[in-house]
Image 1 (cartoon, rainbow, N blue to C red):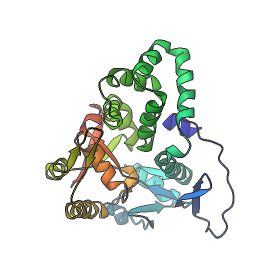
Image 2: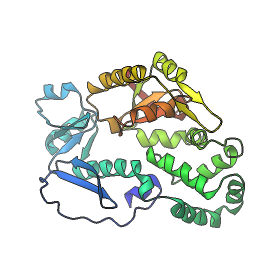
Image 3: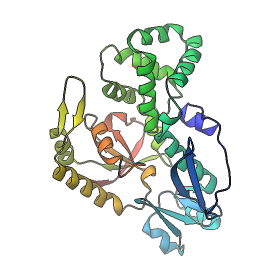
Image 4: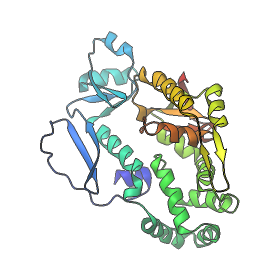
Length: 301
């Protein structure tokens, strides 16, 4: 399936059925019979991924749909082809539906991918790279490897290149006992793949976190013998979230089609802080940007 190609894991059986009480453009996703997300997709239109106000000057009046904190702009196929010639990135309805489903499925990966699935992947890897796997298992249990893979997948990072991930684990697992820090090292090794994943039209659209905001986050980081966590006072946390919300609300690009760019030492803390309000917005560090990838910084927070 396309999901396996994009993420490296196989989905369990998917059932399709008519939804009672839903309009023609609505899709509801249930995982393990529990509703997770609802999407709106206009199947007779195309979605403009990198919409800008100048589209209206071309005599095009898009259909606008607000979902959560993101706006989605849809145009006819004829208008879409015209915009494509002008350099805009568009998705047809089926591609947009898949993209919406894939983002949500990745975010809820722990519902269908765990230790058993990890063991199956490792067994397949052992047939090709027995010495590599032996070295990894000297320092990391299957449970720990499973948690690493879940954390990568939950932030939409593909685990299809298991050899690269195992090479990074073999290098860093003996030195790094904290799983969260271990994941950061592995993400750094996967920079080329991560950039490719989040680029649209060959370009990475990013909102950059300023040094001032990063300093506020750093001052709130606390370390214990067992873990590292962010502890901001409620007022500072609320002010930061209000600032991020203000900067993101006037963007005309859906959150799942751009990234937040920050320093590696605060990346995971910013992700944890914003994921409740902006679940579709991924956070990358500068260490995950490949030299060959073009980055378009559209705003600084």
